Amino acid sequence: MATQNDIIVGFALYQGCTLVDFAGATQVFSACDGFKPLWLANEETITTTEGVTVVPNFTFSNAPEVAILFIPGGGQEGVISTMQNQIYLNFIKQIAETTLWNGSVCTGAFILAAAGILKNCLATTYWSQIPTLGLLSNHLQLKIPPSYPRFSIDVERKIFTGGGISSSLDLALEMVLILKGLEAAQTAQLFIQYQPNPPVDAGDPDHAPQYITDKLRKEDQSFSDALALQIKKIIN
Image (cartoon, rainbow, N blue to C red):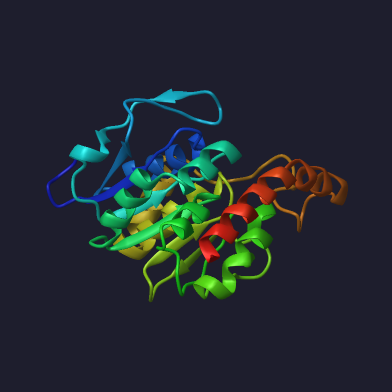
């Protein structure tokens, strides 16, 4: 049961964000006492990359005070347009001034970067876009962990970032662990019966066949190029 002392997790949604990026983490936080996940947007409905339409709990104009700001990733059109959307960027900048934690999952990291929030910290993103995020290393003083971590937590800067899509569940569980302790995280994990045992082992380039990795990298190249262009604008 929600209480007035709950930690409010605000998911700032945008057109073309990815469903599991915010729905997966929402499920985790909802399974744990002491958290209240809310969906925020500047529009009455949001359509995800999967073509699913969702209804936010609050608009930007009437959103409550948020303790944890969580930015989902999305497709090329959604992320690039949001990186240029001053209404969205100003909203999350304002929230970030009073939050306990700020973070993202997947390509949401680039939106945090565009807002000037992702600075002087450890950060990661979707596996194929890690080199693209690296273009911001010097400008934002980012440290990017090796390989393809499910998430990265910068305790000192109070910044969290996640890998791609499904890693939102791991990231949310880690935040529950940090903020509420082991028993709370274990309880949430059991409640959602999250014990991954996939029938295949190809979840990142360290495990997937090279030809599949190469194929997906090629398919993502236009996204990488578009992000690189926006990064040049940020740096300049």
